[in-house]
Image 1 (tube, rainbow, N blue to C red):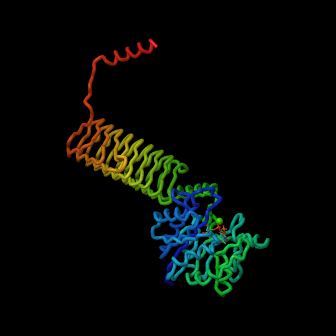
Image 2 (image 1 turned 30 degrees about the horizontal axis):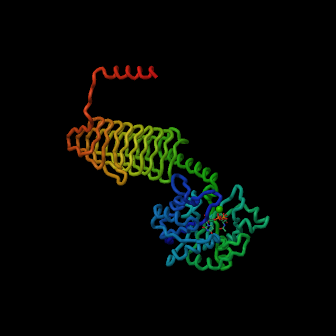
Image 3 (image 1 turned 60 degrees about the vertical axis):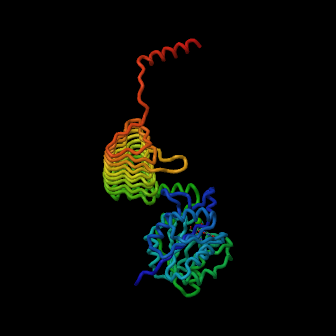
Amino acid sequence: MTKDAVAVVILAAGQGSRMQSDLPKVLHRLGGVPLVAHALTAARSLEPEQIVVVTGHSAELVSQALAKLDPEAAIALQAEQLGTGHAVRQALPALEGFEGRVIILYGDTPFITGDTLATLASHPADLTVLGFEAEDPGRYGRLVVTAQGLERIVEWKDADTATRQIALCNSGVMAMQASLLRQLLPRLTNDNAAGEYYLTDLVALARSEGLHADVVTCDEEETLGINTRAELARAEALFQARARARALEDGVTLTDPGSVWFALDTVIGRDAVIGPNVVFGPGVTVESGAEILPFCHLEGCHVSAGATVGPFARLRPGAELGGDVHVGNFVEIKNSVLDEGVKVGHLTYLGDARVGEHTNIGAGTITCNYDGVMKHRTMIGPRAFIGSDTMLVAPVRVGADAMTGSGSTITEDVPDGALAIGRARQVTKPGLALRLMAALRARKEAR
Ligand code: UD1
Ligand code: CA
């Protein structure tokens, strides 16, 4: 059997009013990234031909975020939220010409795995629904299963007492051929307790056509939806617990796992050591054997093997640390490449810089990279020695094997091998300190 082509529709038009937020629900962050990024990641693992995200509430904000998260995803607008079935119908134009299986999922259920979606995609029924045994079925739609398979889905609002006893619930994830979706969606009505076009009614419609519907089940955790800030916080705890467990399994040392925070895409190599209270924002890779000491914040950066970072260091987007680089306390690095063996021990800001191998950056060095309007680059060659408290006023270049004197403000390029000193010459007045203090004390007493 050849694998069917797959397309994924992600529903994200709802307001999420219970979040009590001006931010649309799917843009609230979990694991350092917007909720919808989790659904996108699961969707992409299927290598789909097309992903369509249905937006509605704050569609513009959601579209802007999607352009960054997945520029290839198509966006369909559902101007009015008339139900999940109506939402999927808005995605049909973006799926024009697509023949294959369509998977529908929600943008606010972050724990759905690619494996589960793959199982659904390859399931042989005409229509497959992802169900779960709910510990507390509450207001979920109930799956009515008979010997012939899945017969229908009944929404809680429309269910009688007997149906409400069913513990097998609808996760909302569904799969079927695109042709079937096109055939059935226009036939949905909103003749129900909510007055909405229910996607779930597709099951009964398919059955009335003599087609076969079936259920694939997964753990309840996977279908966990986010509706409130409390649920978001619980989901974050669950996400972090899983990420920590995975890192430990992968051979990463976490001295105090509970205080390390991961993002969805954090990658850490085997035998890396991560100290307590380290936060990984999105886009971080740490190679094998690197060490991140306590209280560091990393985002959008790469740390090579043998490097040590922190304690109390901040690596911002574009920080690239080569092998055996040492970044010490109260150092901030942004959009800068540090070649092998560079040492930046203390109290330094490097922004928009390139530092050659084995260069030593003294305490208190600052790349003055911003003139109030534009950012400029600082280029420092290999084996250079930047004296403590050097201000490097960019754009500026310090050559290979060059030095800067402590306390220098470097505004002009320094050639290879040169020593540049840019500070006022020291003036020493013998005895003046004693005389000055005596004069000041006398003035105070005279008051
Ligand atoms: C839905 C299912 C229910 C299932 C539950 C699982 C239907 C009719 N019911 O109910 O069987 O147990 O999910 O969580 O499908 N959305 C839109 N446009 C709309 C309406 C919803 O994009 O017009 C999106 C929402 O943003 C959300 C998702 O679809 O991501 C689900 O909508 P929601 O209103 O939460 O559905 P439920 O009533 O919870
Ligand atoms: Ca819901």
